[in-house]
Image (cartoon, rainbow, N blue to C red; front, side, top):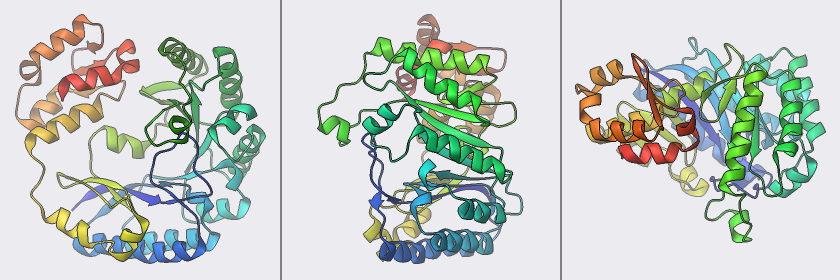
Length: 373
C-alpha cells in the first residue's frame, strides 16, 4: 500500500506576475477542456497502476487555479475524489488569487471538504502590488479573507513578499500589521526573487541590498513571533496546529505525486518531472511518465543529498537517528569536516537528537546546503 501527497498543477494564469518564472499559460477555455482530459488520463494512470494508493494531503496550485471556470474546477474536484482514495486525506488546500474569490467557488470547495486556502496577497500596499504586476488591491485580499472565513474555512495562508525595491521596514510593517490582524492561521514570507527570464530582470530592475533584505527578513520573523506565529521553515510561519501538512511532506522527505505540466514527484524512491509544455502534456500525459516510473530507483547518493536539502529547510532540522537508519550510515562521521566548518561559522546548530541550521543559517540557507552537495 502506497501513501502519498498529491499536488495538482493548474498551468493557467490571467497574466504572469513580473517576478514569476514558473511555467504558466494565459487561460483559454478551449485549452482548459483539453487540459482536463489529459489530467484525467494521468490521474487514472496512477489509480490503475497503484491500486492501493492513498492520498494523505491534496494541494491544488499553479499557475492560478482560481482563474479556471467554475465548471472546470468542479470537474477536477469530482474526478479526483471519484478516482483516488482520499479517505485518509487530512488536509485539502488550494491556491486562490484574492480577486477570484467568490461565494460560489468557496461553496464548491466546501462541498469537497477543502479545509485550507492559500491566498497570493504578496503585499497590502497598492503601489507595491502594481510594481509586482498583481491584479488586486490590498482591500481585495481583506475582503477575500472575510468571505473565506464566512463559510467556515479558518485555515487561511497569506503569501507575502519582502525585499521589494523601494520598500523599507516601515512599509513592511504596514503589510505585516494588516496580515496579522486578519483571521489567518499561516503566513509565508518570501524575499522577492530576481530570476533569469522574469520581467524584473529583463527590465534591468535591481534588487535591494543584501543588508536591507536581511533587515526586512529579520523584522518579519520578530514581528510574527510576537504575534503568535511560530517559524517552522525558512519562509513559513503558523499559529499552533496550523503548519502546512502538504508542504511538510516535501520537507520531511516523504512521498508526493505531482500531476499536470511541469509538476514534480518523489515516489517510490524515484524523482521525476512532467514536461513543462501544455501542448506536449495534452498530446501525451502518461507516455513519458510511464517510462520514468519503470526506471531504476535513484542512486543512494542522490537520495541522501535530497534528504539533507529538504530537511534543513525546517527550523527543527532532522533526526540524526532517522538519517542513520534510512541510509545505514553515520551522518556525523560521514560529514565531520562539513559539520565542523558550519558550526565554526555559526550556520549550524545541534541539540541532543537533531541537526538544524541556526537563525543566521536560515537566512544564509543556500550557503549551508551547497556544502552538502
